[in-house]
Length: 626
Image 1 (cartoon, rainbow, N blue to C red):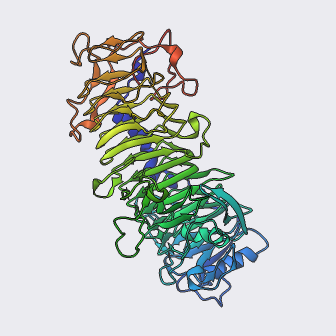
Image 2 (image 1 turned 180 degrees about the horizontal axis):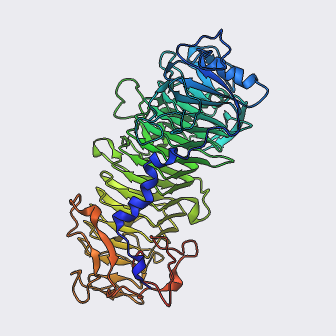
Image 3 (image 1 turned 180 degrees about the vertical axis):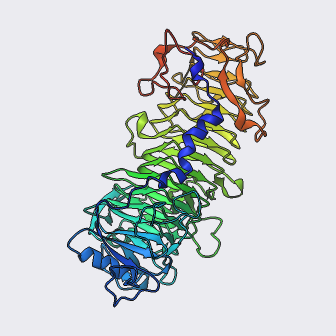
């Protein structure tokens, strides 16, 4: 039942949703990094390791010296670092023991010892914006006026920052069993206020089923920072780092957190996956690159990425690095900005990221390249994010220019295990804005608009997808579609507004009779929808409606007596109209869509509308997204 209080403008709604991404409001009330009064050890470029490190005047010169002293201190202690460029001096230990080659140099974090940068060298507080505290040069909390740089380039460090000081554990990941990753630190440990650059996780090792490869897997990921459980990075810039396999910017594991960071201009260049299979079956030999900005691999505990911008990162698997890759070998790229597995991306902007098409998909056990912005794998969540201007290099596309959702290991057991909600997915490049290839998934309360291809598309493994309370408009292809493959089945779109797309509003390409369209508006798309044998009910169409209970026809003229009476629809379905973001898909009080839906079809997992109001407000529900 529509009420006046429900009116909202699409643009205004998402300006509200994404206001959290203007981070200036966050720092004013930001608490100190560590509660209480921990002992502080100070570091500056003018310091000397013969000093006691207990004041700015007695500052140390070497960051690792200060970390080690703080770690040895019997009480709580942290390290403050003044502006300047610092290089790692300590050699890390990995699953193979203590290392001593320069590539293993890193800033090594210890449990409970926070490392804080962005100081001028006379502050009395680590709080941003407080009297005597750290100062910003811009509106984002990573824009600290006194840039403090951790640079691994001179040592060709595999990792600039390393949180793996508490030993190692073995996990199963994808096709590998028993790979070694850092154990969780005993206490929450924070890295705050640095620019991290110059790391390259490029050990000469394959991803294969050998003991040595499993021990060295960590040095194929996390070029900027490798952060395990209880590790946290905040207010940092992570830029110009690389990795072979994943996380050129950073790798996050098992409960790690990244928040208020800018992950920009990082790259993954590809690792060789090689398995012999059994009697020739299951053989794999191809190159793969995941999550150029961030690879997030939750295992026992979920990873969180929050209030961050992820931009200009590149996945380009290369069998001939640093020269140009061959045009024949199999090279798969997944997630130009982020790769999520048991991880949540919350309140983030993901933009201008790219991946490269696989020149020989499926050969050597490889797959098509997927997810120009984000690759959402088993139990990944995107919440309250803006995803825009991502895609394939040179617009030579395969699957998912914006987001790709997959679950090939079938770990998801319900729609909430792979989830996009409260998000704005717009202006992504040629291909599919949201591609889904998992047996359970949900896209809720989101706007999918002005993309240079299909809005949302289900591939052959897409089953049980629920698309609910969404506005899908002004896309260059179909609005909501399902592939011709017979495995694609049982997908539903409910209470959604599919309008002004430069193709079909809805396109069902297989003959399964178990897809459902309920309480939806299909209006003024370029071509009438194709439903095959789908079940359609309580929906409105700007052409002769398909057979089904409660379907109605509305006029293609918005303000006609029988028109939908949207407040401010865009004039046509041409992409990049100057006013496309000003569209207001609310309906007037005299709209024929009011109270024409079926409230018994509202899914129990989502009982609110796109404006977060209760969906059922009276005797019935409206046919649209609010």
